[in-house]
Image (tube, rainbow, N blue to C red; front, side, top):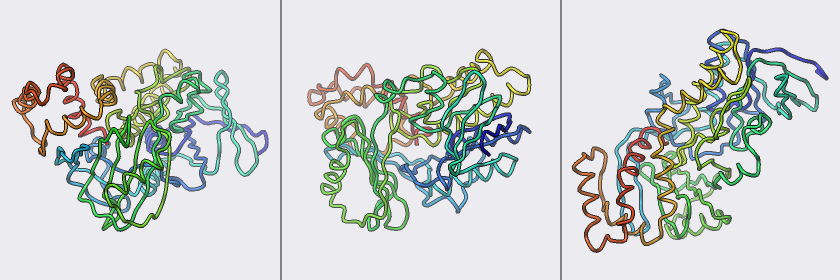
Length: 398
């Protein structure tokens, strides 16, 4: 394959949920699609909390299959440092993420997409639309009409396309570290907002199966491993570690620009995670689907220019994932002092907010006028924004 040049309509870089969903949309419209995955096996290693709301699959008309569902989840609980919590009864799933990724890839391959694993894209000529690939120590080139960058939070495609500066983007990533543990009992998805242990983020215990859970942390602190160990000791978790994983999650919103001539950026590569709960599977599939649809339309009409592809950005900005309340709520939460987190826990009490009414929301806001909640008074103007963000996040943020 040395110096060989292949020709395709669309090249997708990355076979995660964003890339495979984009490839599926392009291939089913009859395009010649090639998807690259640098790892030998799609979905491995797993770098994810693996939680997904039922709405994410419903949105894409994907039936939850036993092959990739590790556990059906009925409750999501947000727990504060003082032990108070708020509970939401929303349907969701804990995935076997490797199997889920493989399911999505097979779906794309079944409609005609070609998949190449152990293939690393090492360069991209933006002007000529040629990607340089290394597989089995051999180099070859692929000329294409559109490249869809779905290559994760440290996207090379976005950098090669001039859409992000590496040093600047590094500041937009939060560290995550997770243990898969046996001997841990949890009912659903438990999320812990504890500023002392996880500044800028949160901790989680997600039910993975019978007495198996994913226990993790996302934080702006640099010693996430020690902080998770501290949390495990605090919660008296005595499970056996089955697997460890670490990664980086975009948490400051999407890139300022997510398209260029012949280029679209989807999933974590574009920063499309929910900044409140840091969930990225649902947003990856949404932007993957949209990028595939826009790419297919562009090639059909013969216009792959930046001007036409800007339609992609206009479209995703109308999705729930782009609502301004999400980023604003995250900024407010990250600025909370430990005292405010404690009082916020007291404010909501031990409450089931599944079907909270407008009157119920107003009641919570009015409670902040009580003397013991005065520390929260500066937050009052932003509480409707935070509540809106949590409403969106319940469906689309995990």
